[in-house]
Image (cartoon, rainbow, N blue to C red; front, side, top):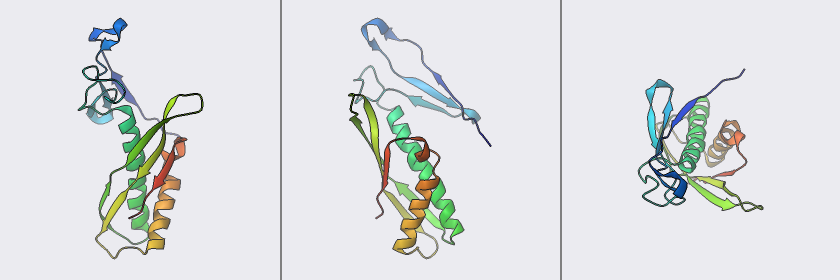
Length: 152
């Protein structure tokens, strides 16, 4: 079985492209009509050539890893008889240089905080749920970045 996932990325020049003085602001459009403002990170491309209120690819990468983990976690918890009431993760991605000097998101740390509408699982069961969720996550299985889950 295979699935395709599509996104349309739209950008148009504004400014002096040849001098590098142009906006990196663009948009991501997804099926169902959702459009997300996007830009290079202001940490990479200084203002005013980036848009600080837009999502940058690095943030989206971290969010997709966290979201995928959460979706599996909630389902695996349900299957084990536990009902998640809330799930919050303030995930952090770390960009470093690799051996040839290229920048990459080398590590993503997940910090899930879960509240339960049923009795909470034991620490061992909680760790097992997170481990199983990580192993099943499509995004984590697709990247070489280290993904670490910190359980409170």
